[in-house]
Length: 472
Ligand SMILES: [Zn+2]
Image (cartoon, helix red, strand yellow):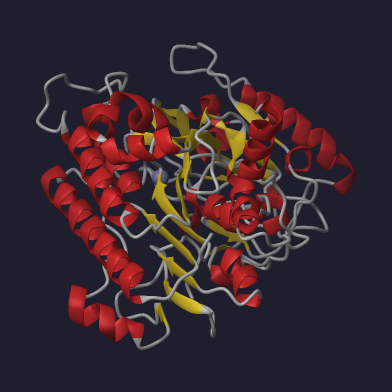
């Protein structure tokens, strides 16, 4: 066996029921990899959100261990403010750190939470969609930015304004971004001397949020035969062609993993979390808005507020606890009782017709062995992710048809895809039970390196190999 290499191709939000089933016929390259190796669902983190899920994928640390619960996290109990999760908030080693210490070189492209880039890296990096813009310091080595720009133009960090009704413009921007990113990937696969290559393309996520109603027959506003009805098939076919060109850089000793996180599903509607808290006496405002307004633009009367929430693909609720929050009012000894009561009430919120929707509210201590940072008191999955959380107040109702931050048709789903193929992977077919947090250990296993202490999960492929050997 020659030099072992691992290539991880990440497609944010690629949905298994599309990639493995509905669009399988237009994805011959993915099917080829599946046939040569193994494949299955890849269970996301709780919450199943790009941040923190990809950081869990590359570190093996769960969101509690990371202390990262979403795109924005509270900066501490001493303040009511939230701040964006960046590379600076990741305090555990990620794959390229561990591999670098072992003398191996990584090419890391667009992986969420890589901005700002590390001062030094054994290999190359282009930071993620959370990079502030094409003028930022987004590449390592530093001179790579100039090289890429001269070949591919200014770095397209993300699709601008992806929550829009201008669908033709959106579709064009998604393709423009994806094409640039895959072209950069091929360039670096060719030019770099890499042991580990990983890229994460966000186009699929942007496509789902923008076009899900057009492609999914179960979306309440789906119109059969609409002009974008085939756009999903075409975009997945396009992704597959890109996948094929990347896979050509994998020699006989390279293991290729194709992974996604999370999946996507129809968003049935939104639950206006803060509006609900307001109506139930948990949240008090100094003045009520006459139109939908984000909570952070309003004056909260903390002296009468017991709880407030955040919108997003899932809901987060924070309790205002005396001695913990700056103007807390809930006596600390009542935190547990208050939390349980609120949890039960949130779980009982029905749909607009009074039917149960199956909401689950979790307390972080029940999800993670440790919950670092400033975790929400409740992590609320409305309708088990069929509904999103709307943070605005002044919505006039508890139920919303759309989204308060712009048109968005899709919510995240629990499972992404996993496909593994290469000399170290037996052609075992479908495997079950793989989780996002298993990937880091799996990659280290392929290099026969020991995982650091913070790296949880299980090596999927070593398990597969063992089963195979025992069976043989
Ligand atoms: Zn998304």
